[in-house]
Image 1 (tube, rainbow over the protein chains, first blue to last red):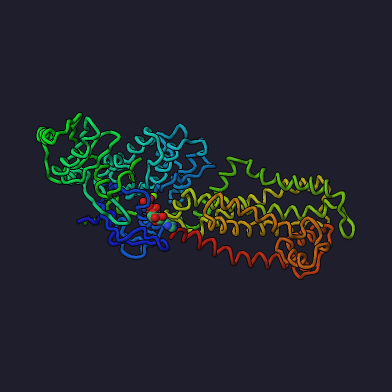
Image 2: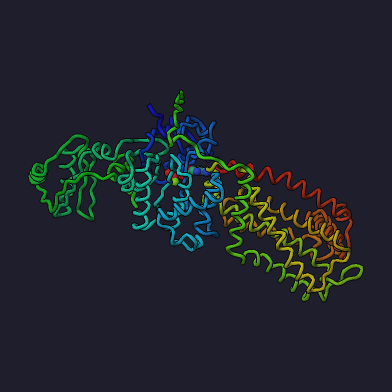
Length: 317
Length: 278
Ligand SMILES: Nc1ncnc2c1ncn2[C@@H]1O[C@H](COP(=O)(O)OP(=O)(O)O)[C@@H](O)[C@H]1O
Ligand SMILES: [Mg+2]
């Protein structure tokens, strides 16, 4: 049995009175992409910083690529790439020089660093801007360079902390493509994100983090199945909203949420429950609700997330 | 007959990368700073603009109303003070730069790499030192143009330049520590304003003899005053020495102050860098 690329057990970390991690458990098999999903302040960055040997845990243990992050920090540092929450690239020099410097720090020597930089710039479509000062780059370009900077040594384990936060859709797509390519090449990726679609697209497994602990984990598919299907009913008159809520509460396991402005009620069915459209329409009819629109759809990770953290709006972007 | 030794090849994913070694890390770190200067030489020029403006304002506007104890002209009295001011001002870009690197995550990236932390800081300090040496050239030319002279021969003058470079590197380490401690670029920028009063309560612009007693004591024990007095002595420029021990023995005092400040701030900076956000 091969050891997991990332193995975290009971990790705790506090900053003064703030407990950022309260017993984090996480296992990421080698060669997979794990999405660490959580709202702002959930402890994602703290988890990444502990794993990248930048912060010392108060309790618990964490191994990366088989090495302990506290006792074998030097080996861990040789096994990882880190693209933090900010684009950590030097502004006053060119993109190419940024990569060359990192190559030299990693012991590639001056020629090795140069050719590695050239390769990466070519491969990630940055060759055209490589000789411009980073100061002149757009946010998306910077992020891409930052990601590439974490790949200089082709590390077996890569940490990406909110790699697409604040990017336009096209730049996000580019980062996603790059991450997928790396994953196909066998790199283990731990990716933190507040964006559920991002985890949905990239991750083999998702861990939902809230208040410093993992409150749910599994494949995106399994997490979605756990809350069943999603039902949306739009009623003709606002006065019927309450009745519709009552009908749906009887049918589904979830708690219906009414949106008076849209005259709409939403609910999730709950694990394993199937609800047929005709049945739903019949029940609404019997209660005297004239539905304008009834929709059943597979839930998104957004639904999972909201159902788990029970804080609607917090994960809204 | 051959036996085939089968060595279990470690899977690629478990082979940790190489590391470069502290000397190479130091050089790479210096290269990083020098590349940034090469891309924007304006940075070096900008750091000269303030002292040159000061030569003009102090030397020509106030200078006419100033008399220097003993003989001699005010601009010649002023120049050693400006040399030292430039060294002291080296603190600001270092401090702001260190804080910016923390704020933008560069420090985190560096620290996540298999690089010696003291090598990283040492390289930056070396690069700053080199810049400090280069800056002395235009400053000397400006001085010569306004009537300042080296009056005691090349040997002592080189000694003065040596002390200036030493003091600049002291300022670099102080700046690195303060920048890391500030952690935010704006905060570091605000903090750097405080260097101004520190630089003013010295013998750099006016002789300390005219100051009220307590202020005079503060000014003469200010490390900056010792460096200025040492430069005046080694260049043999005019100026009343002062009463306190450091300005009476300026060369020794400069060396002692520098040693003391380095002994305090180098370990502080390295520790702050290594432990940031832990
Ligand atoms: N260096 C620090 N000092 C004090 N508090 C911190 C520090 N880093 C994080 N925290 C706190 O720990 C909690 C988790 O933060 P973080 O890991 O950054 O969350 P996320 O990345 O999920 O937004 C937050 O309450 C945050 O304020
Ligand atoms: Mg974060």
